[in-house]
Image 1 (cartoon, rainbow, N blue to C red):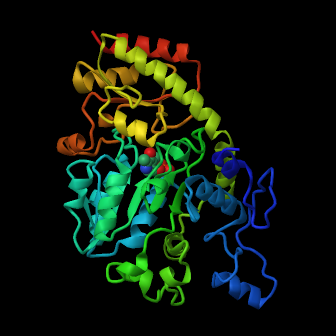
Image 2 (spheres, protein in one colour; image 1 turned 30 degrees about the vertical axis):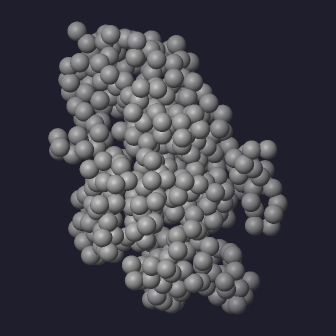
Image 3 (cartoon, rainbow, N blue to C red; image 1 turned 120 degrees about the vertical axis):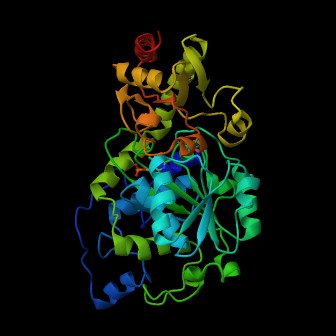
Length: 424
Ligand SMILES: *Cc1c(COP(=O)(O)O)cnc(C)c1O
């Protein structure tokens, strides 16, 4: 059996049983046997559940499967991808510190880093590009992590994870990777030097555009205790959680325990167990959906590349894509079903194409069973200035397609008529 099959289907229930269907535990709090049982659970001395803001048996199954798929030691699921991104950063960064990021980011992640964390006195240092050297240059003794998207959304860049991990580790900082677009079926960043992985489960993993969710996966690899001065929050008694020392008391999964007990427990972006159940169902068909997503995307990318009405096409599956060597190295020959392209006519032509599609949905999402189109300059990245747009790898005419599971001929017919409406 493949590792992924085991991770997705075999369970990892606490008692070793292989549950076929995962029950949904729709309860806010859990019954204790007695006071000692209650205290042991709340001190994390034994596994168990007490209050569902913090964890829940259904979410626990999802956490174990995501951790197994990524090859991590533990995972935390939360209400959305943005909650996962924010909890991951706030688990290491505090006022007066900074972190270094590749500029090609999801729109809300960019805004959160550039304009929200700054109000808390946490500085996101945007590198000039996604190269390890550019990021390494920005690290100083106040740097708490490097953060990248393994495949940038919507830019489509593929980051050379091993070289970035190397730069991070030589400087003594952890490497956090948003692996949403790639999914662990295609890429497992922890095998390439990442220390922590975050996900929006809303995208390919859920797969149907019905359910928000996010995850943080701990690789259990970062030597927090060797960098005690940079990371007091992992090495000194935590007053917000009965003086636990995370690196000492939870050496295999300190990041996830800290994210759960400090961020989730106190600020509460909890994933509903019902959403967890839906995401678990999505996970069961992830592998087979990705095959169809990819086949459709390859056919549509080839169609766009042949069409004279299209000025440029960026697709990870094209050998002339500048990232192709990294696609081969990191994605095992697979590509995500994301295509970006541009028409002559700039912003107006992009907008006209967007307004003309009939089968594609004008939807702010990706990885959905349905095919989706976005014109980032007028939607997801609307709040960015022109120079911020350029830095994020987006042009005024850029159209992003997320190719779904429909029949490919119907998708091509729709693109054809929308191109005719947009290009004169
Ligand atoms: C969608 C997305 C997010 C945010 O996820 P939500 O579940 O929408 O909050 C973060 N990172 C990437 C790369 C995404 O595509």
